[in-house]
Structures are given as structure tokens and as C-alpha cells.
Length: 378
Image (cartoon, rainbow, N blue to C red; front, top):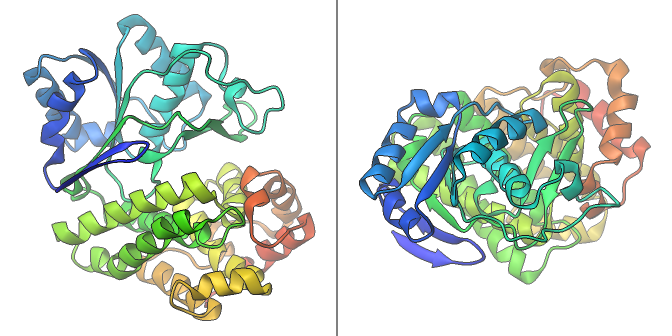
């Protein structure tokens, strides 16, 4: 077990959840616990509440978070928060729970609407009032949201996915307890693991990458690439689970310093229009993005620094998808070719497109969708 403080203090080790009460008491006495029905059913929220109660923390639970949360999820959580008046927020779950808690924190402390904090909003405003302390406890090895200053929330009316927040809005503490990931279905382990791998690969080549960010990207890739197949084959192995969880967190920190690229730009419209799960969406697009970017020398060398040629890396991503039982083509995901112009137009407006190592046009993005339409091999 280790205890390390960056912008977010990180405590990692099997059984770390048992520290929740003690660590919360260092920050406040009234906690809003944000989670989802699956985490409740797995018994994790009950354990968390027991630790909080033993530490004398008054707690209320909001457990109605949906996958790919929208502004409606945050509004519902906000109403509970206003009534309870917490001094600490705790997010227990995957990226959806953590992002909902962050969005709630933004509005509870600073008022307004979520789009006021959208990085793509020309009239966006910062946080005039300090945020409440926030503890994140990931139950998946995927998003890295536990150490990130941004929340991804979709507008309930327009379905636009908004990146909300700014530097300094990182969670106060992340508790990484691999025991919480043991109850994940294989499909969720696979989808979130692919998402984390895409984070490690994309952050290693983006334009803003730095020697600092590459430390996190490369170590994340090492841990995730080494253990992804193992976690599918031996899901009960706690050491493998911990390696995946830590790799996901390192990739999340890499995002903080170097952002993401067009695999994510291409993925978000697929989720909005066709309901493609995020890990599946970024995974099916990444091999084609690698080949596209590697036509320029700088990203080509950046991919090679991960230990493989770009073509071998693209093929490895496809092999991981196949091993995980995920689709390797957009048509297999239910995507209609007639939607490509709309998808490409929306992908071009995603903020991550600006950080891609090779400039892209709408036509380039449409070409990438077409390349992925019937692809069956790396």
C-alpha cells in the first residue's frame, strides 16, 4: 500500500475502503455519498456507509446516477445536496458517479448552470467560491476520473457532451481499492479496460504531451498492456486487478497534463447517436486513428516509444477487442453508414480534436468512420 499526494492525494491498496471514515473525518462531518444502483446491489455502498457511521460521519446517499450522466442526473443529485447540506462529497462507482458528484459540487458551491463551466463555452466562468472537498472511490479500472479536474456531462436536451471544470478542481482524495473491482461483470471489466488503454495510448502522442505527462502515459500503458489479458483470464487475481486500477489512474493523470485525441472525438457521437458504450466506441476507432496519425513522423515516433510499431500497436488493439468479445467494426456496433456525415461533423466539434498530434478535417474524420465501418482485423 502507498499514500501519495499529487494534486489529488492517492491512497492505493487492497482494503483501502476501510480508511474512508477516518479520511472523511479529516475533511468534514456531513457526507453526501454519490453512487449508482449497480454499486448498491454489489453491497459497496453499504460497506462505505458503515465505515462512515463508525467514524461519526452523518451520511446521506444519492444512488440514482445513470451511465453517461446528463444534466438531469446532476440536477437530481443537487436537490438532495441542497436539502442535506454536506461538507464533503464522496463518489463511489465508475466515471458516471464521479462526474455526477463533481458537477453537483460545481453547482452547489458556485450556482448557475453546468454550461457556465463548459470549457467550450466562450462565456464560461471560473469558480468564484471554493469547492467542497471530494473523495473519489473508483469501482472500475477505466476512466481515471478519480484524479481529474473535469467532469463529462451530457446536456439532457441537446445530448452534447460537455467537459466541465478547470485546473484546481481535482478531487481531494482518491481511494484505490482493487477489491471493489472484483464484482465487475466481464463485459464491464473489458470495456473499462479498453478505455484506460486508449487513454494511455492517446496521451502518449497528443500535441500537449510533456516529459512529465509521458511518465504517466508510459507507466499506465505498461501496467494496462501487461495485465489486460490477465484480468480477463483470471478476474479473481487481486494483484492483476490492482495493476489495472493503478494503470487507469496513471492514465487519468496523463490526461490532466496532455489531454486526449481524435479517438475520443470520434467516439462521443457514436455514443450520442447509436448508444455505443464508450469503451467499445474508443476501442473500435483507435486502430484507424493510430494508422492515420502515424503518417506524420512525430506521432509515429511517439507510438514507437510505447515499444511497438504503429501497425503492430493498431493490430494489438484489435486483438484486445476480439479477446474481450467486443466489436471490431462500426457496422457490428449498429452504426448506419448514412450517419457518417453527421457523425464526422460532430466529431470535428469535440474539444479533444484540437489536441490530436496530426491536424484533422471533417473529411478526415468521415474517412476514419468509413475505414472502421467494416473493419474486422487490425
